[in-house]
Image (cartoon, rainbow over all chains, first blue to last red; front, side, top):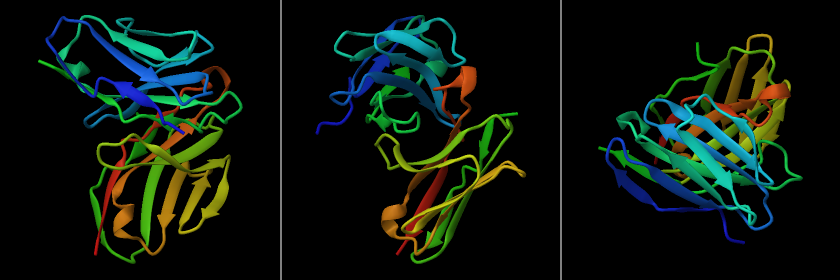
Length: 114
Length: 113
């Protein structure tokens, strides 16, 4: 069974630009979560999508947004990039019958803002 | 104050040692507590979870929650070099915060032969 996949692996952007990160969940999983893992800050919850709807959101500004497509894949958009947005962005998926902690993570997208 | 605090280490131990990893949390409205392990250049993977308080054992790993002191612990017995990774403690609060997993900073563990 293929795991969670994310693209691109690395992304380099300039301050003020927009970044788009993509995630494909494990086949059959309907929930997708996005996390930011910045140096020294640990893993921080960004967004949770389930069945195409945003279910919950972390303490991030509105320039962090996303969506989930009918095939359950997801996209994270970060507008007006700032230097402190440089981090590893992780996507996780969960089966609808799984417990909230049964999240399977992808390898992440490393975003560097210069 | 962060909701989950974790000493980032790094922690270095010899092979075979007993490892104790700890976290504290500030909000009592927690339901699930969990430990994830993250190898270098990989995403985290669920190691163990507990509900409410008490102990849970799985092979060489034991997860412990003490709600009175708001303390979460992970013990690794007979540690192996393959246990070298970053360990993240986390919790889910439930209620309106359902789904918002909160994690500590992560502790970097190195087990040397």
